[in-house]
Image (cartoon, rainbow, N blue to C red):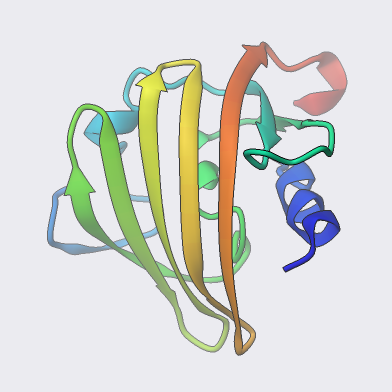
Length: 138
């Protein structure tokens, strides 16, 4: 996957119980409880490209940088205070499995892979909370 497409997806951010299939709007995972909405910077590790900043109104969107608008169900694979892994199944659109490592509430490592529109992908991002969103990002 080209870096430009990866960043295009990351830059377009607009905005339970383990082992149980849930709607995509299920309760906050333990690993994400201390992670707050705001202005987040995402970059691919080792990339020469500049980080892209986006206002994230709901941190759950970080699990679905792809397939954000699709109707999906989620299956929580792992949910500890520092690591969460969730698999989303989105009928007709694809599926995605994302692991977020919470290094600190302001620093995350996001690893995501799956199939979108019949095409496989694998993404990795370093995410840093830069502060609150400005008036235009809300």
